[in-house]
Image (cartoon, rainbow over all chains, first blue to last red; front, side, top):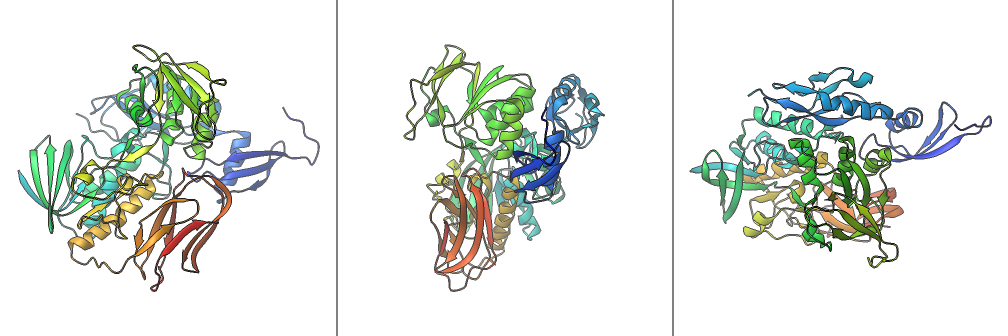
Length: 129
Length: 414
């Protein structure tokens, strides 16, 4: 835990991962707010900095077992970002899930996966066989 | 079986699909896509991570989602698709071409066509390409093969992993293998800078505390049947490894992410000239190769970082090929595009004065605080300051109109 004197800010260099551009951000912040972001080429950079400093989140992508499709694994993703801290819990649940074809892109294969607030959704469609 | 088409697109990945759609929307009637795998989508089908489509669809998609959007477009567009169809030869007969395919469904097919679009993509460089010393045990494979095993077939290639090369596929696989329960011990990169995108260093390595050894290489692979360890050593500016600082990591697999090379066996057979720098065909402003009527786009032309740019380039290629088929392709005077300071290559290497030109370029080394200039003689057509440039990041520049009196274009950093 850092203790700051009043009016003193922390600084951190981040790389924005919102898109493949990967802007280098110089961020200044106090105990609970971002005070300045330099280097972002779009607004999403500021949002990213806020999240990344105080509660970093990621999309998790993986595969789950599927039966009745042309291959045995269905690619899936969380439909929004989940806290970095619970990524491994999300994966534990992913290992247990089994689905049956047919399935369409966007179909929920597990709602509120690992209590993350995000749904696990299919990212590929398979017709049943 | 003998078939007749107006255009044959070789490869049903992102490049081939976008090119086929563009041919169709530009009025070409009979379009065939020949795909070697049993599904369309190419390498995207195994790239289950997100990060695709931000430019194209303004949202972040996974590889299979990006592929499916294009597959759906293609299915609606009355385009003939042969899957499980390996293209084995292209014969140039001047005005027309004959493409030979070996198809699971139809056997040997001889296709007469007016135009061919090459969209075969690229291949990974492997152990043989980079000549790593040591024994030849199992467990040494390219990162893309590991990706296919894990994501499509559900096999784990190993539990203790070392990755050589920090290309994007290697970084993505570091995270994927970690999520699947493997221990990724190190990513080793011969260059002093990472080969992949910055965002992948952050979300694939830093998130999991996976060490990245820059300016290091694998100097020995050990193990009899299965790989048991690798030796890793720092290298100096002449790429000589330092024996004193060498260390050993035990592992049961070594993944190689050491670059991609356009796959041009078919192109060479039909007499297409390749560019020594990109290993892709030499093309003109219309993305046409030196063989009239044969075009190229996507990773077979030059290796891209973003699929969005592949789609964009392939659309332009389909557009030009459609004009060729409809006999409206005008080939005016062409002027050369020359590479200057810090520029490894620019594509296309020729543009037409008075017309629009979309240039793709890569730099030779990293540099900070440099400005990209595109000039026609002393006239500056484009200028952009860059905080930092990396060879791993392809840059795209649109020149709205090349001056009608231009004699050459110079692309350089200052």
